[in-house]
Structures are given as structure tokens and as C-alpha cells.
Image (cartoon, rainbow, N blue to C red; front, side, top):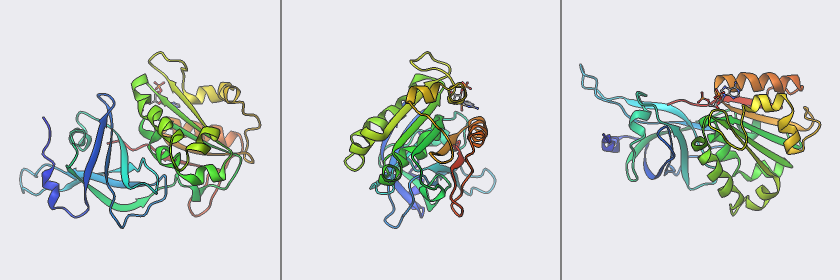
Length: 271
Ligand code: A2P
């Protein structure tokens, strides 16, 4: 049954939902108004959520917040988010029912490691993602700095099924037709989606395709190393650990906001 989210109207930090799109039983995206004072760097995340149910003993209602990557660039007028739906998930079981004009809570304190400031400049940038881990790259792919700093931009997205790739396909289409970055994206952006369960044109985990050389061969990439390549990784724990190991094997060193390096990693958030 749809949840009543109107109670959050009384809250500070409430933002209005402007758009909702469902991709499947387990994935959806939505947009909310942007607080006038919110400044963030493309790739960062914020805490968002709804009011929880009243405590049965005290009757008190507390906000239910989770970290969500902002899936739109720093210059955009509204904020986009990409979310899974978990049937018994405290937040997403409710959040999946939001509609335009409903309100959500947004704590305007953006943070994160998947930002340009954490990487030094090189020839290529690789964005490795699984599932909803693609969200921060939906921000970075529409960020002009991405194309100003790198000659080649690669987004890999590994998902179980074809329906899970829809958000990324729409993102690539929108990016290549974007007023600000479209022209550069058409020249520099390479999209590499794979599925692991449902049959598709390209099957397998990106880690396997990296290690057996398929990915480099298909993208015409030679000399993958710490001089030419930078990477950002966002996905399941397994992806993050495996890609980190592979990148280190090629000599790349982890960076941070305070100490820019060759690659950065962040766990995809779960509702
Ligand atoms: P697989 O189907 O082989 O587990 P999940 O839905 O479990 O978060 O997984 C999302 C996608 O990430 C799936 O396609 C899954 O593949 C893939 N995946 C999981 N672990 C890894 C890993 N260590 N390296 C690469 N891809 C992974």
C-alpha cells in the first residue's frame, strides 16, 4: 500500500519530489528540488530519507536516513538519485512509493571520495560499477571536468539482468546529447555494460573480462598503468576488493581528498 509521506512536510531539510521512474521491481530513480544553499562536488553523496513509523511505546517518530550518491552533476537544478527497492528494507520499502509533490528529507552535507579532487590527471579515467554503484558516475559523466582532464572516459557497469542496465543506457544517451558535455562525450566516452545472469550481448563480470584481457582488447587499450590510467570504483564489496587488487597489480595507488592518487573506491549504498 502506498505510504503517506506528507508528515515530513513539517520537517526541516524537506525537499519536494519532482519526478519518479521505476525500472523494475527492484530499481527506481527519482528527482527532488535542490536546496538553494547546497553546493556539492560531482560524485559526492548525501543522507536522504523519510520519517519512520511511530515508536509503539513512546509515539515518537524519528527520521530514517541512508547515504545516497547524488546521481546528477553539480551544475544541475534538481538532484537525482538511483535506488534499489528492498521489500523489508526500513527505508526503501517506503521510499519506493514516493510520487511527485511528496517530500523527502535531505541533509545538505555532501561528502565522498569519488571526486576529481582525489585523483591526479592522466590519459584515461575508468569508472567501474555494479548495480546502483553507477549512481555517482551519473554525476561525473555529466561533469565538464571529466572531459577536460581525460582523453578517454570508460564506464563499465556489471549487473545481473538486462533490466538493471536500463538506467545506464538512458544515462549514456542523455550524456551524449547533453548541451554542456554532449560533444565531448560523443568523442571520449565508452560504455561497457555486462550481465552475469541474463543472456545479453556481453556477459561476465567486468573483473573476469579485465583479467583475461577482453576489456582492453575490445576498447583498443594498451599500456594500462599508473602513468596513463586513473580509476573510480563503486559497487558491491566483492567488486571493490577485486578491482582494487587488479589496479594495485598494475601499479596504481589509492588516492584521497587530502592526498590525490591514481584510484578511489566507495561502497555502493544499500537502502
Ligand atoms: P554475479 O551475478 O556473478 O554475482 P548484486 O546484485 O549481488 O549486488 O550483484 C550485482 C552485479 O555485480 C552482478 O552482476 C554480480 O555478478 C556482480 N558482482 C558481484 N561480485 C562481483 C565481483 N567481485 N566482481 C565483479 N562483479 C561482481
